[in-house]
Image (cartoon, rainbow, N blue to C red; front, side, top):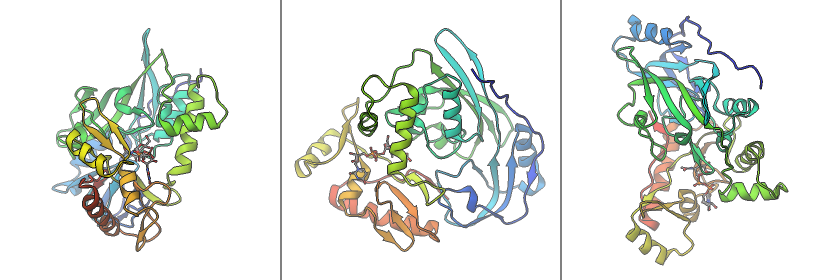
Length: 352
Ligand code: EPU
């Protein structure tokens, strides 16, 4: 097993000048500015930043990779740029490895590192843009796995008091693209690290249709190992989802809506092809990408804001779009989906 990196603590807070450009800090690539921005590379840097006289009375925004945010205007406050680094195996017992990663670690690199270190379990979540610290906020999920299923605890600092709290998975109140940190805890906490529980009795999770297709197309016949799943997820994502480094986007722009069974039955009678997933509680989840696609929006644009041509759930900045352009496009899509299917689409990224 390769050597495990320690959590690195660098106590120096770094202030940036007034009018800090946020273009490189949001994956849509919107050209907006913050009144102040501060690089947070340790818990003490955070304490110093929030007590700094320049921060007094200002609103604060925590930005990790900026992969789940729509910045519609300049931010008249203090942006905390999360740059805490480090990852390590904390402990292991007979059943699992416990691995902690600092909030500023790149998510995909962290997933790759756990595999290289012989601790599989996160491979279905390969290539999701963003940082480790952002992962619990919207409970990232893909190809049959949500991070909630691997989360042991989340360490966070309450910004108003500086108090450090360790939330166990139950306290995080994870839901579909949802958590305590997106609701009651919103704007209150800065997540500093996440600890994952990776079971030693590893089981492949390869049932998601796109994933099993990619595995069989790759010539795999027997049970896949974690590396094969990782590679297949990377291949599927590269084929369908735009790389934010090449074309600005925030992944799925809408959540897949969940509706009650009677509403679904009525809809199915009218739309027999509808893509749906029955939930444990009898409700039905619909594929928002399919709904949007059926309304003819795939590949269409409104000025420089467009619907991705290979996955209608993703809105993209073709270059020079503003947050307002994206919101206008989203509104037009919402209106058409509501008119045809009677279903309201809820936006996934946070809007500022
Ligand atoms: N579909 C279409 N047209 C489209 C897009 C999708 O007909 O333009 C159909 C597909 O053919 C498929 C169904 O809709 O039958 C579902 O599509 P897909 O498997 O691509 O997944 P999704 O439900 O659209 C969700 C997540 C993605 C995640 C994938 C795979 C949400 C909001 N999105 O998308 O997450 O990668 O499943 O697990 O739950 C993200 O959150 O940013 C994200 C990309």
